[in-house]
Amino acid sequence: MKLGAYCAMLLREALPDLSWRRRVDARRELLAGIVGAVLVIPQAITFAYLVGLPPETGLYCAVFVGFLASLFGNSPMVGGPNTAVSILLSLTVMQYAGRGSPIYTEFVLVLSLMVGLIQLAIWLLRGAEIFRYFSPAAIIGIKTGVGVLLITSALEGALGLSPLSTQFFYEKFYLAAVSWSELVNPYSVATALVTIVSGLALKRIWPRTYIVAAVIAGGIVGTAIYLVQGPIGSQLELLGHVTMRLLPVQWPHLTPQHWLFMEAVVPSAIAIAVLGLAQSLVIARDLKARLVDDLDLEKEVFAQGIANTLSPIFSTFAGSGSFNRTSVAVGMGARTPLAGIIAAGAVVAFAFALGPLLTYLPMPAIAGVLVLVGIGMIQGDEVRQLMRGRVDGIVFLVTLFTVTFLGLDVGILVAVLASAAFLLAGMSKVDFDVSHEGETECIAVKGNLFYASVDRLGQHLRAHPSACTRLDLTRVPFCDATAHAMICAVQYERSANGGRLDLVPAARA
Image 1: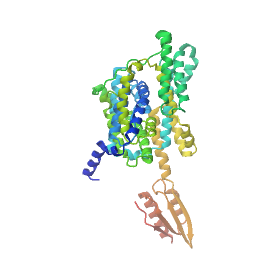
Image 2: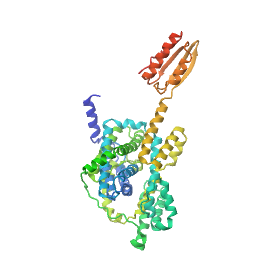
Image 3: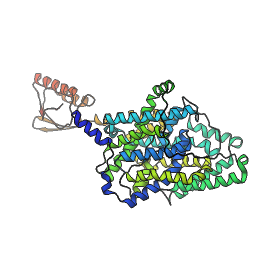
Image 4: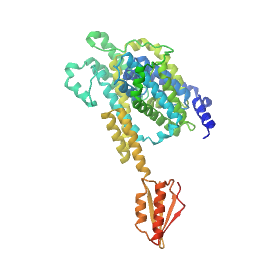
């Protein structure tokens, strides 16, 4: 592609595309946006807690990252705070700074900037095509593993415990069980249980908004306990004052200390960027197949990248496309980015209106929401379907085991390697049918002929050096230099031994 055409293409993808305004159903988009805003508020606060930042940063993520992703995108995908991205941000930064400290906040913002810049680099390199080869089984394995990690991360908040330092996730449950009477706060347990049980019960009735109802139920019970028993008697931690600003603009700090941190976390930043894009493009590919024929995947990559690059300027952290919020928006009739834009504005209005109530939201109710989100990420139907296939089942189990026992960053690396390994194994399978026309052997080859797939065919051809063979390559899309060399060598051997190898047609490089 010529440089001028390449630059024109990049400019077209980088500028907002408002052509979707001609097919807008304003009533449906408005309704989807408002419902999405109501749904994202408890999730945004929960994910901010998960990252280790004040609750308002989660709301800023829902507002600014969500708005920018929709403005520069061209689909009804809803962006904003994301479970897996939030966990990875926290796990990465906790190795270099104490959770909740000022430098911790600065490192999260700098890491978010790195994630966005890496995603923009992937866009410049036309990287959306790469994610076609990311196995769906691996993505589901990551989602399921993140669900397990999310439930585990909520354990301390649900039981009213101080953070537990353990190597493996199941050790937390063991420590809580053996020290139940001495450590566990029964009022925290009651608040979290009401949130979880009410959410699971209401999920069948209100599958799209059950989390909001669960937060209300848990909040009412926790607040009642707090008012009756008092702060000392209940020992319940409250969310506290949410100090939102309309335009929380700041510039990330880039001192020598920050540059050293950036140098140390490059692998983690790449992992977060790839995982965020992988999730967003899985959603986008599904929307393209079902609803939006003209959806441009490269434009969605740019939209996610620019939103995350600008996130620290708006005092928030990196996000990604959301499976559940996009599902809600599409189910409510959203077909354009307008729903995401409306949701971002509605979050601001609701957050200011509900600010006094959010102050008294018990933290065990937030922990209960984390458990509900974690349970929601473990999709039994998807897992059962994957386990019916041997290859998909292996990729899923390997990814799930690695994420839950070795960490999300290692799990993503293993998922990529497993996807590549099984893709290569599938590509290296070559079938050939053998028939005879008189004394001539006819071999019809199907598949790619390259260094990893030519051995079996080469062994068959060399087994009969004096035979006359017609090799049909019409169903061979690709033939590399190794395969060419093997075919030429067999032709030479056949000629020397009175045989013949004819090609139909000639092999292509």
